[in-house]
Image 1 (cartoon, rainbow, N blue to C red):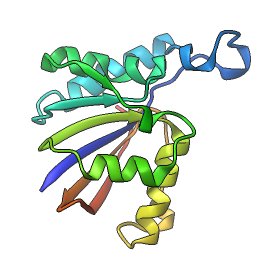
Image 2 (tube, one colour; image 1 turned 90 degrees about the horizontal axis):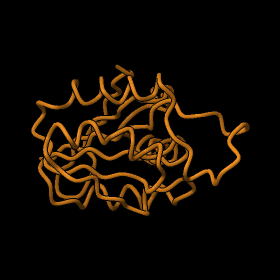
Image 3 (cartoon, helix red, strand yellow; image 1 turned 180 degrees about the vertical axis):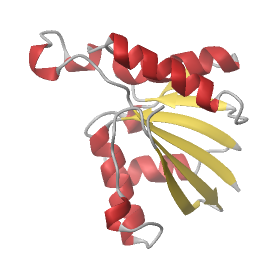
Image 4 (cartoon, rainbow, N blue to C red; image 1 turned 135 degrees about the horizontal axis):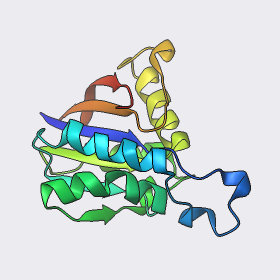
Length: 153
């Protein structure tokens, strides 16, 4: 059985006030603190791969964890904002790592969670999407067997 720590990016600069491309929108000071706490929270979990949406805010969210583990952050376009949730879920469920962390956006996570609810893995009322929160998914033979919400650190 493998584990996927599916992280929603930490607090980023406000979209409405950001004038550069949205993919370049960085974390705020509070978001950087959340990223540091995520690294502390998951640094001892045996994570062997760190993936991220190509967006700066997602990369910045998992960079402290990757640094702590001595791993690169691998950018995965399938985790980008607006990506098809089913494709993201298939990508994560098919990963070879025993444990991996992956950072993406609220819309992708929400879609993934709706798919898991449809499949009876969790209830619709269980869906939570706070920034810097994590969903720990246990995967067996390419299928998500359980998903548990971990609140932001």
